[in-house]
Amino acid sequence: MRNIIKYFLLFFTVLISGQELKKDTLKYTDIETVIINDKDYEKIDYSFALKQEINFRLKSVNPYSGYEIGLRFNNNLKQKGRISNVILYLHKTESKVNLTNLEINFYKINPKTGLPEEKLNTQQIIYTPKNKRRGQVKINVENHHIPFSEEGVLVSVKWLPNEFKDVAVGPAIRLTNYTEKLTYVSFNNDMTKWNNRFNFSKKLDIYTNVMLGLEVYIKKKKKNE
Figure 1 (tube, rainbow, N blue to C red):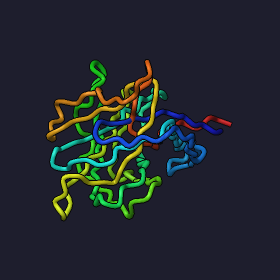
Figure 2 (cartoon, rainbow, N blue to C red):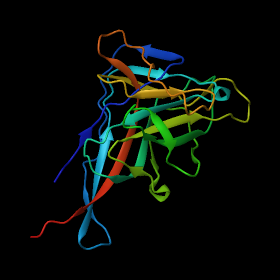
Figure 3 (cartoon, rainbow, N blue to C red):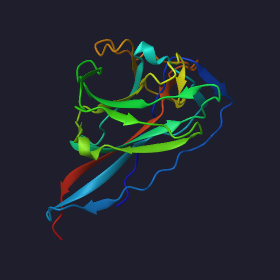
Figure 4 (spheres, one colour):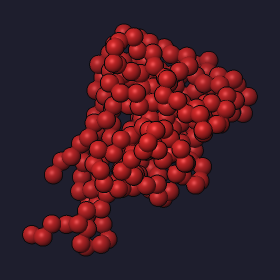
């Protein structure tokens, strides 16, 4: 049984570098069924991913602005699960821009407003970039036991201050276009003021989104054979 859910992710407002549209479809591992300890259940993995539609990037961010950008993942499965991995799609960072650590956070979605609210991870999750090249990074978060509720979840990235005290830091993160506003941003570490006004697209009903990926799993009762 092969299941793949392609979700389209999102984008944010700061320095954007745009190049002519360059089709580059991201490829993902097919979903596998894995038997876990309980013999009566199976662990089903689902991948929510995104297709690159434009070759844009969020070039750099002021880490002292408390800027945080995230993508909302809707739960089309309508089944509760757990988050296993987050995927970052990084663009090439300019040579003159220093790198810094990224903080990864998860937020509960308010079913009435669609806005992120309560933070789901109780511990800080940090990714330290290894280089300035473009590429994909998979971050395993299974040990944090983060739920994937029926309302979905917002996954965000925050650039932290570095040792050089730079006011513009990388890594650069990819942006893409999609038919929904799924990207939310917040400033000044104020989690009560999320907004989804992040958009650089000039096309009607097409919106810029930040590119993130999410892998979740659910436990299903095995069918009797």
